[in-house]
Image (cartoon, rainbow, N blue to C red; front, side, top):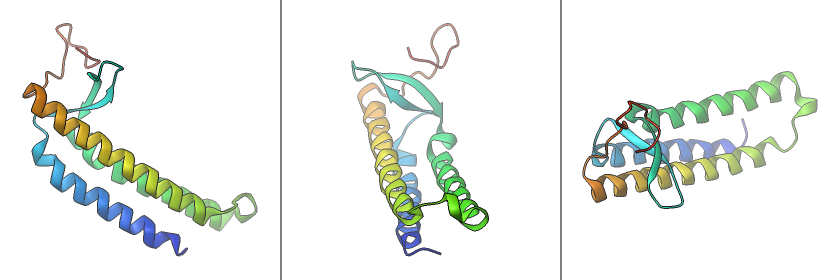
Length: 123
């Protein structure tokens, strides 16, 4: 276990806390995940994937780093630095996306998740 795992644990806690904070504030069952240059959402994800998929993704990456460090240590260099960088960047991006999704829900009420042709990609 690296000292960087303390930062990783704090990042997981911050992601879970932001999910609990922003989850009720994001209206609708789909969350905008990508915005175009015109500041309008391009595509949406189911709300549970947008919120809790990040926690699963972070845990999967950390497991991958642990497996590589354990079973192929000669191919792993500066794992602690990678864990810290990954934790900080992914947490910041997740909070940014949730904040943008909250603002999009406030601006347009409940955003329509599907176009008229049934596609979830944009509107």
